[in-house]
Amino acid sequence: MSGVQQELKQTQGQFESHVNQLQQQHLQQLQQQACQIQELQLLQIQRLRHWLVFAVHSDATTVDLLRPHHEQR
Image (cartoon, rainbow, N blue to C red; front, top):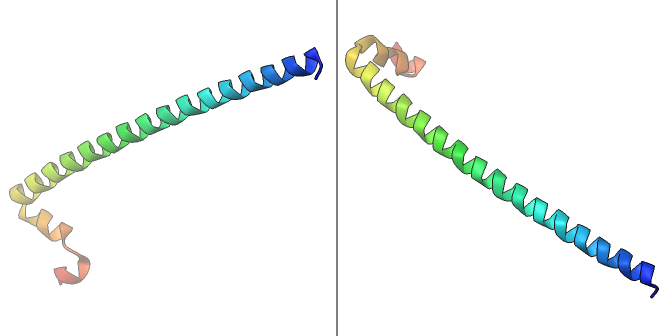
């Protein structure tokens, strides 16, 4: 194997390991973002739940609105 081929192989190896590293970092970022999104969704659900409980307690007509249509009649 000539010196040029050897150098090329070495450079290719470095490049592949660099690409691998970038992919790993990107994957970690995506996983962190997914966790943050889930936390936000949970917060929104909790807030909605509090709001619904409050609305139901404070206004009887809200209860009718929340019932399925076939039950209202």
